[in-house]
Image (cartoon, rainbow, N blue to C red; front, top):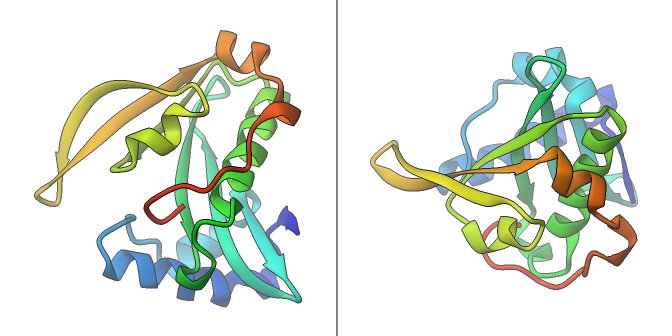
Length: 155
């Protein structure tokens, strides 16, 4: 179900992200940007259809940012967003990241993974939380115990 994105996924990733950009839920990503950073993307697919996407941007070898987290509207609340975040957190742990950041409107969703709200920022006229999780939390995290509970928002 979850795999690294491949070239054949680019147009579906772009379509799904454009939907959520239109809802002002995520920041836009151009097709060129998606292609150039495809190695950062993970997709949740069913029968070759991309139903969810997330990217993990490695900033400096110690810090990374969760970006472009979204799930198709008809598959909301099925745990796909949770599984995608679980995947990038495991990936970050394997890469020995010290800190992972996320900018989100959905504070509760990221709280369940151990993220803490650092500050509130204003982006495009909307309030969003700047959240992070530190290395110690990642090192202690037992990924097999993360609940696949449903979430609100676009996750």
